[in-house]
Length: 332
Image (cartoon, rainbow, N blue to C red; front, side, top):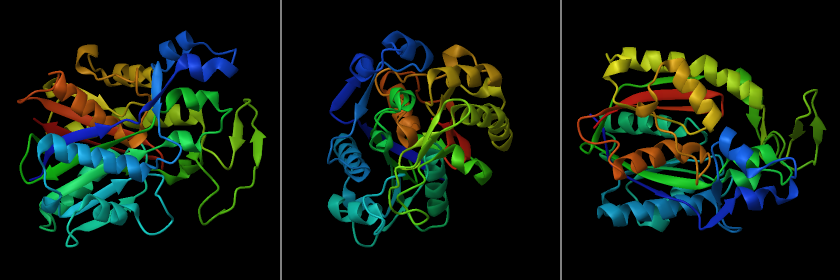
């Protein structure tokens, strides 16, 4: 069996309010963003602060808060869409920087909003296979570095941040069975086309589609309506399948922590799944959508404020880049 033993997170120092962000966009208001997206401000990584740097800070915070020795870590997983280099894997660099033994395994995996759930699945497999006993799972993204300055829609949604989680053979929450899914036919609905092997050099290419949305190959492009329909088509069945695989009913789940996409999306999913409002976590107000870190941030917040406590069953989901999705149940 595998358990979550500890959770911490890191948010960059710089905080950008709606009022500051929207100074150059007179057609937008802070009230509009808050009511539809649910975000009042978001944190931005520093100019020279990478996703790897944020992951390191989250890990160091975890070690300090829970008195964890890096010497006890025997596997390191880093979920990020933005490694420090094409090679080597940033997880190898973090192994050295964090003082984790050279006997530990370490690798990156490239996923976005489903990445936390996938990481828990990988960690559980490593423990079940006898490969590791203490897995450090780091999730970190700095999406704002990949957003065009004129892309006000996405800049209102995304915040930068990182989370750290220790998954072990004992802990505060037993990790249940997983349901995972992938549909690569939708890969271009959320994509940065340039910068890797297919198109290494920036091109400056952009065009406007029939709906007035600008596609920029050097920056993040998100097909908002396409992602919306993907989510509403796949997440309610995901929840049903997670319940079935874990022999639970919806009423037996005490709380739900979904990936924090945006307020409108979360409200739609909650209603579609038939989840009571009081059992459903929504909190993007001062963080925004921190991509792979949202679920762990949400769990830590709910533990801190007492919303989640021992004896509770909590269903978690992630969904997005890939396109990909996943879910499981945590028994606290």
